[in-house]
Image (cartoon, rainbow, N blue to C red; front, side, top):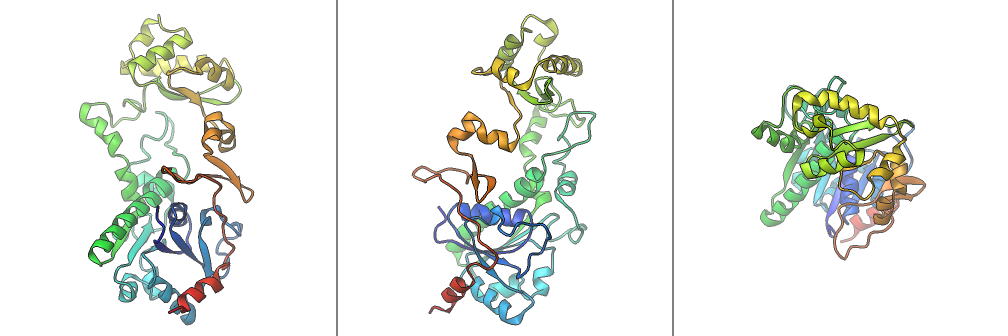
Length: 361
């Protein structure tokens, strides 16, 4: 889908290379500018986040290497960088410098706090950004410390995906106007924006400021329960017709307390009752009990278990390539071959190839 678009990615950690992987998955020519030496001890030589990219190794503090990068930027539709504000400017590679050689360039900046604001130059990580943005507030059961899945809410959801959609929008704009722009993708902004679906429930009184009292974070029918073998079962039968199927499978259809699905005062006690019920059998027995129903009950699987699940296996969602378990490209398009992910390059693997392209008239 993105054939013909070139993205230059400056090596960084977390959401920036993920956004570059997404562009590469969708067919863009993504050239990652690796450091000449690995920056983080213990990091893989070939990261799956670099799949489908080409690699050139440059020292951005070296004048000759910086000149190569400038030539490369002149050919690009977009640039991705993930440093703290001001770092690229100090290298002589800030937006003003890059626009001087390519006025149509989309300059994508990926940070946690954004380019401006009191925290802009402060260190932080996924959980810090999601905590300040409000996105972490409803992330666990009431009475427990909020804990979101690592990286998903901040780095990926609020960061990489917003950088990608912002850059795509800006590339369309640049093609129409001939003028590039800066995309300031901040995890605090994106993760806050993702809250709007949940916040919309507040318009009808279905979202409470107090954790455990809202429609999606308090009910007994919207929880994860531990099973007798240490596994987990997810339950989220929001609609009354699905809730009725849930009660029927559990033999609770005639219980008067469970009949009051939306009585907030009953939720804590009913959570305890369901916790005790689900603790009596192993996870897979519960899966079998609810199998084929619309009761909205399912297992909580590890990524390796998910790869073996019949539905995930049928779609080929999880794949093993280069010895690493990884998810296939998403979303899917009609007429698009859905196969193994492209290989990840070694650091500097395409140096000669890329330099030769830049030397061509």
